[in-house]
Amino acid sequence: MSFEKLSLIAPILRALETQGYTTPTPIQSQAIPVVLAQKDLLACAQTGTGKTAAFAIPILQLLYQEKQAAATPDRHIKTLILTPTRELAIQIAENIRDYGAHTGIKHLVIFGGVSAHTQIQTLKQGTDILIATPGRLLDLWQQGHINLRYIRQFVLDEADRMLDMGFIHDVKRVITKLPEKRQTLFFSATTPNEIAGLANSILTNPEKVAVTPVSSTAEKIEQQMYYVDKSSKRSLLIHVLKDASIASALVFTRTKHGADRVAKELSKAGIQANAIHGDKSQNSRQRALTDFKAGRIRVLVATDIAARGIDVDNLSHVINYEIPNVPETYVHRIGRTGRGGASGIALSFCEAEERPYVKDITKLIGQSIPVVSNHPFPAGESAERPAPAVQMRQSSSQQINGRKNGNGGNGNGGNKRKWHGGGGQGRPQQRQQN
Image 1 (tube, rainbow, N blue to C red):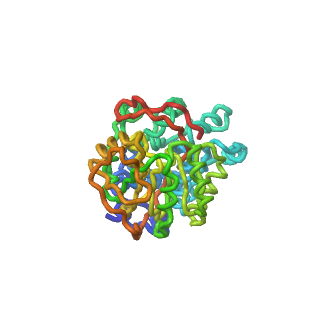
Image 2 (image 1 turned 90 degrees about the vertical axis):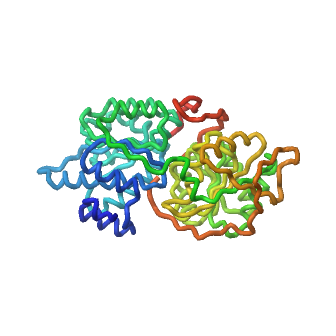
Image 3 (image 1 turned 90 degrees about the horizontal axis):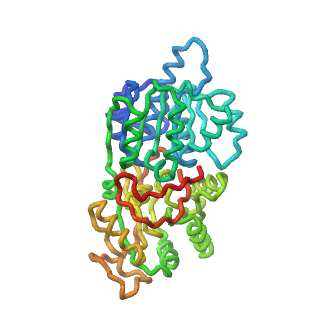
């Protein structure tokens, strides 16, 4: 199927052609007709499936057609897109800019961590689409700078991540400010009980779309497991990154402090690296991400919340410096490579205390992770070593072909409780800065 067959208008088709898009992804081919028909949508889709375009493209078309038919200009906000992190909000705004380049539709992105003055001044000029994080949206609404009474389309993106980050109550507050008569598009990678309940409460006879279950993303990514003592992880990381075939690597740590420490140690070892997490200023985070995308730094060290939003074309490797205690997070992390159907490589460093997490991960993805046995920093001989083992490749280079499709992140601390899904039990509920 081509985009032409989805009844898209010429200005949008022209923009998609400029971006090099010719064939819609499964989520796009299923969701775009639903949104154009102005029906509510419940979509289970994770990052990397093209979901941003699945809602942005048809919304742009609806707003364009409405504007063409209007007798007078309308400066009210018509579409609200709510998303959990600053980086993801920026990525969505960039996609809307690209897809709507020839429509004249205005958009604005607002988020915390920066001065609100410029955002307020732009709001006064009027905008059609507002992309926002929950905290800053409510702050500016309470100050009287935002009017949500004219919203026609409401998009809740990454709903399960909203729950993870403690934003679910803010989301519910935002919903109470919206008109009852509206089109609602609900996107979530997973649907624990609280998220399912929220969807049922805000959607009206929704069409349902589900693509790429969370466990299946790992299938197309080459995975390798390194068993190592905790004290040797830094040395192992430096050793692995001596492989020149690793063109770019996104390294995940569990804590913000850990991300800073790893980035500093890599820099001392002569490896160009920077860290990105919630305690960094917005300018610092954006600069690090821009430098990474442009190839000015080879390694970006990030905390877990970045697993849902960093979208880098041709990212060759993801490295789990620390194993996540939530198995779904592992899949989201490694999904930063292998984007848009491309291949990718994921390496994981596991110490003794993290072995139960690996067991949960392999259960979720339904496959064992090959073990690299002949690296210079093996775990102590007393540690149980699972089979099968594989010999470490001399070079893990691959031709990585990526595809651009939108999504952001910050840090979330080091809660080590295990969570196995369902009902949201055991999830950390602390609110993250956004």
